[in-house]
Length: 154
Image 1 (cartoon, rainbow, N blue to C red):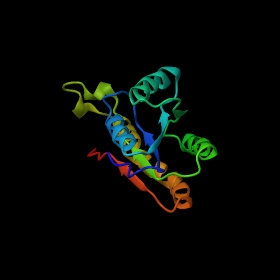
Image 2: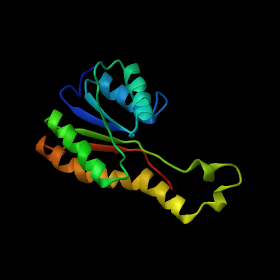
Image 3: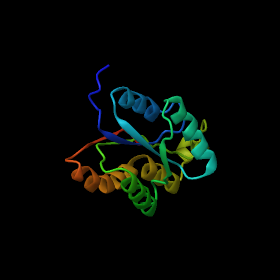
Image 4: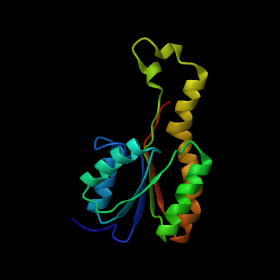
């Protein structure tokens, strides 16, 4: 396989396990030579879950940092940590989705309260804006970059 992404750095946001879309995207980027970094949801359980998925990619000593993308200060902290370790960002993958499972149960969707819906939209869609805003200057220093996100219909 060609190494057309050799020397490129990707930040993969959203790997929860080996069935995550982000995991398969990371696998493909890795196969084409990209280096990868991985934010994960805060908490030891989430870190371990993401670590197991990243280990399955065969990456030794991956760069990982906690990130609740629904909080601007955590986006800033994660990007500051990323920039302290890496000198470039070429690819940002946003593969985050959230919905309160209570309202996904059969017969409950129509009862979804506004706050639960807005929370789902904030996490599943608006976090792309926050991550892209913060990624932009880092990508600019490397001459530009690409942002990939999973489409969300709300």
